[in-house]
Length: 255
Image (cartoon, helix red, strand yellow):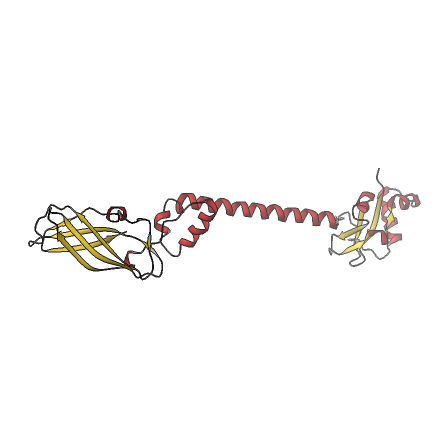
């Protein structure tokens, strides 16, 4: 059976019962369970086993223990000699606290990663083409695509185009020939927009053409090219429309 000792805190005078294995954990250093001060238990150590043997005149083991405490530390109070002893080993407590902090840090980071992935796949990715055009959301997509290896469509703002010198003429074979100058007034490069032409007769009835993509009206140019800021480009193409005689026309840029 392990030998039992008594020691007292030099700061608050509380008495603690401890065993030899407690002393071996931190070279005799313990923390007071009352005032939480560190002290060297061996500085005021009393062996209960030896002192109990000296108190042979006592009727019970409890009386022998109380006599040993009274002789070793006379100034103890009745509360100090109660059986509510507390002992904390400083090194073991510090190691356990450090391990707990690392565990919660890992759980926190894992939760953030899972939350980001859930938002990405449930909302951001399905709406990528729309949200990526917003200058507030675009940096988020640029960062995400740098991780996942995806590509973003070029930023485009229909309001940042200007159309000038529009002409719609009828060719010899009856087709309508469209000619116009398109300028990018944005401070960023933009792709060529989609175009739709609407003709109207003298009665006000309108006849809209199909929507023409860049690859339809730019066969000789790479339709993936971008229009630089403040750059003007000439666009010309022909299309067939059911109206033979028209009094007005309108060119609309479509995103």
